[in-house]
Image 1 (tube, one colour):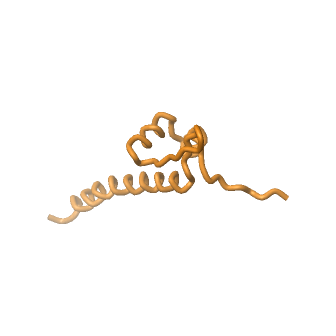
Image 2 (cartoon, helix red, strand yellow):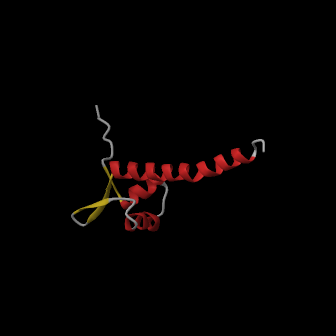
Image 3 (cartoon, helix red, strand yellow):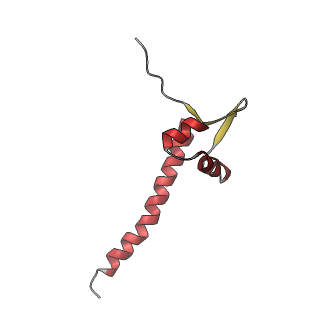
Length: 80
């Protein structure tokens, strides 16, 4: 019986495939400090926790960007 092993770290190629982003975008996010990689020898890896934190930060930023537009639209439809 084989046990399923969860990925604990992604190499760049695996990260890009798992999160549907380009290699250049992944490196740009690392350069901007939003995605935190680590080195294992010569390999650049991204921990599962770092990848999930990066995804949550993008989701939060998307929600923040949408919230003001929603509240403005609601405020305009009210009685004046």
